[in-house]
Length: 443
Image 1: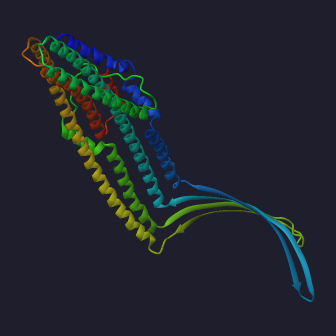
Image 2: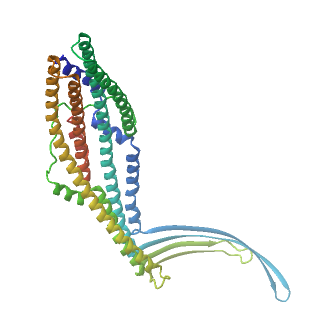
Image 3: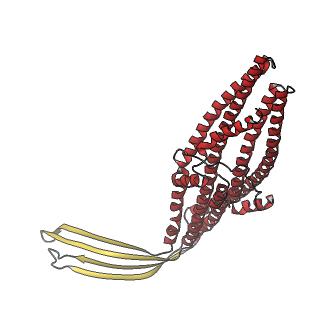
């Protein structure tokens, strides 16, 4: 009995993990998420739209060309009262076309708008980078949640089998008179409780699988678990201050607000340019024609070309320019405060994630030691029960401790990996390479 129990537990755990042992890995889930996730698709479309800000800003520095054409039919009745009334009717057609070219020579606000468009593209790129890192974290977390839910279910099933064996042993010992009915009742109570836990674990697994399905767009056929006894390494660099420094400068959220601050700074300059004169080069080429008049008897054709510069000096616009200047200054101050808040938030996230990784590594080490001790305690209590120096409740408690420790160890490992991803996301360095690194830890 003492040797059969660990083998039975291992068999149940192996059976519970079979469904997910040979199937999709984390990298496959991540690539499915890239192709399906709606948030990521929205971010990709937003990036494409943001990149169009650059040609729009450049357009203010390039010439504009316009073509105009018209044709007019004239039918004029004229009455003259000179030495008697006479009436005349004149009919003719006027038509023509004009091509106009305007090239800004000095429009400071247009140049500032162009520099703003470059920053807008940088903001869009940073926003997309944030969405990509968020997708990695969400996909990995959904993957880990399924693994943990599956491990919880497998643990409940294995514990149920072990308690069932202990229940049968208690019943046999009661029948032969070597144990009391209390042992049977205690084992039965534990068995019923574990059955309820198994139902709850199965329901939780279904929910976690649906959450993963919402990210990748299909039912997970099978997910690879962490290799048994996998060793997790400490984050590099192993210095919380360096991670905080990286977060304050390279975090995607900080880069977004940095771009917004630079845009707001240039907006002040752009609004103040409303006081500056503008100078444009303007050239036109046109032709106009008139058909023969019914009374005058002749038509005309003319061609005209002009080229010159136009100077415009703003003098007063009802105070609108000054008001917009004050508004831009206030918005710049707001953008500066938002940037500082983003830096502080990124630093806080980096500290929390770093501490989470360190805490997780310490827990993994402690639970690994506790697992060995729990297994030894179970073996000792099982042997003591067989020789009569331990009672049934001692064995049940030792079994419960072993299963609880095994489950907490699995959770600590997955939580540590998730914290490592969040740490790199906070520092702005999370990439597909990190997904591949964790993927290499899977079976």
